[in-house]
Image (cartoon, rainbow, N blue to C red; front, side, top):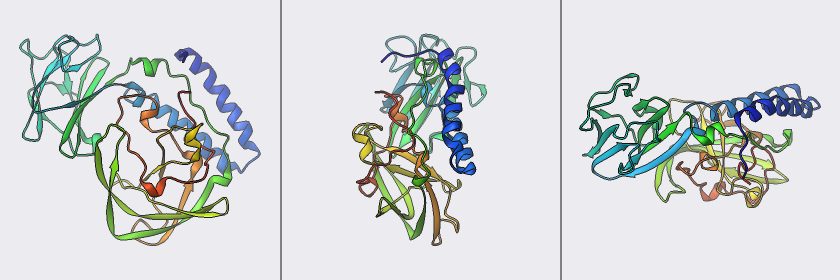
Length: 310
């Protein structure tokens, strides 16, 4: 596939937004405003210096010492802008320690914004946002944990996938696919094991289910709760468009909480126009979950984001 440069993207985004605005003007003003705002925010998140488009590496690690740097012999191989020997990671007793190479830590190596010292790096199971970040120039890496397994994720704000981002492809927005669902809580919440494309799995709580009607049929889908402190539900969905026009494995839908919270019966707004691709659609280094059986819908949801790579 031919990649177009950043200048092309910057030139075409205003035209795409103008086209979308014209399409939406004939629909409800609030709906039009919401769709424009959501799409702009989604694109901006992808293009952040540490967004998913900047991901350039993922390496699962075993106990012992793991050298990190740009030299070919390193287990964690960094882009050529990094020193040949940047650091050593030591996995031992369910903890990963950052250690200096024999040359010492290079000047400019930082951990969570402070000069690097030998220390244990924070890595909380399934809570990557809490991980310690090790940075050098444009490079940023951190340890992630999945149950008893550890991996190192590497990002680079100068990654080709970010610099050559060529925009997203969308279905036309359709207010028909913005529905109010009935929310039924699970008391207590149950847990579900989610499989990943990389062959590993992990568990998250399922606080309840949403029941909605589309195309004359009623469906029931379950979200997971990634962080109890954040009022956001995460639906991993697959529909029949995955066979040809959307990402084959799944798409994601994030929503707010139901009107009476997750612990009480109520109503939940599901706007399928906000369906987005998982990170795996943009990079081979992501560890995306697969949808549970009940979230694999036998209908088409021809709204939201389409395939990034044809």
